[in-house]
Length: 575
Image (cartoon, rainbow, N blue to C red; front, side, top):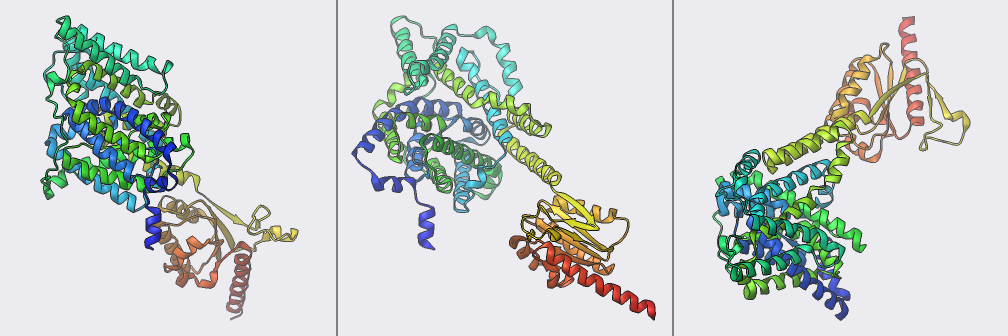
């Protein structure tokens, strides 16, 4: 048991090191160096946009990035703060402060840990695609909305969190545009979009930040243009790795922050597994989704004690790692070490980065997150799909992500049940049963391809899962039959599972049938369904001998019972 557990929850790093060599280390080291440099401006941007200080974003990228690479189930995943968390983190900080964020992040980490150990990694992947696209597009629009102030250098002291109030304030302050800041921001966006035409390995965000930082530094110090705001004008950068500090938990704070923590956990799980799955397709390997969730959980439990924010797998940095030759978790570990060295020795230089340039970086992040092509494609599909997509998107933008995910999941469940109910069919047959197309019943004898049924025997077939959404449909069909039969054969060969409600309905049907002196015979019951039925009272009500493995045995049993019923009626008639 212990060996099985260790095998199932083995970090990808340990597997990778078995055949590790110098060539792989050089490739990982070069990739880790580049990814570390690329991650710096993104970590700063995500930290600032989340409502915390820049170094908290860097600290998160260092600590969480190291843990996710060290313990993760993917060989190439790069972890750290991401754009997906900006909206929820900003809302928590605004309402509950940094302490509230730390509590929510730790709770989310515990949830992720439990998801991993309960082996829910594969289940998380099946969250409906319209929900993922809906809230991702909603997050993208929200991120874009939060960057307008810095992108155009608007003179606004406090930007409201409400979407419509935010845009109303922007339009009211259009006359305060700082044209130098706007030029820096727009040029940064242009550089990021144009860079892939010349270089696939070095991201445009890194080039834009280096170039614009140098330009703004020269403009401020040699041309006297001081109106362009930089990180140093708004924040004091602490170029030291913080010490661990206790977090003040209480039952009340856990209760209040639990919904937010759930949202962080779900976002972290979806984002990391999505990133790992995309990476698998590129490198031709498979990640361990449960171990990946465990690593995300540990990272989000540890990081808040050092002042960090929520972290997950970052798809852009993961792809940068792959494109630069990284093939093992060593690259992710080196990326974290590179970030640590930059923070300790070059952290003070980050104060010269212009805010408009960071805003430009996040505008591009928002555009890439928006998945507008997928949104447009899904909008053309069924009304149910469009309803889930639009509802999740609108709730994310207008209210918050917590409500959006909860309502979106609820809508998806209802639509799933509706479709499952529609896909499950119940039919009734009298007179004869054609089994020529039944593989499990086909005997090779042409005479056996049609089973003749005397009057008084009916065959009901359930095609699909027998769960609570279908149980009433079955009852309605039973009541709709005009003439009452003496024997009912219920074919369950196409029933993959039966839930508690379906089992309860079947049990009630058998009871009512017995009261009406109608014998029920079950046919084609698979092992899974049979195991559930045997735990109920159904075998006692109808008799174990009336649960048959195929339609031949069921019809034979029905014919025997039919003859017995005929004989009993004849005896009564004589008397």
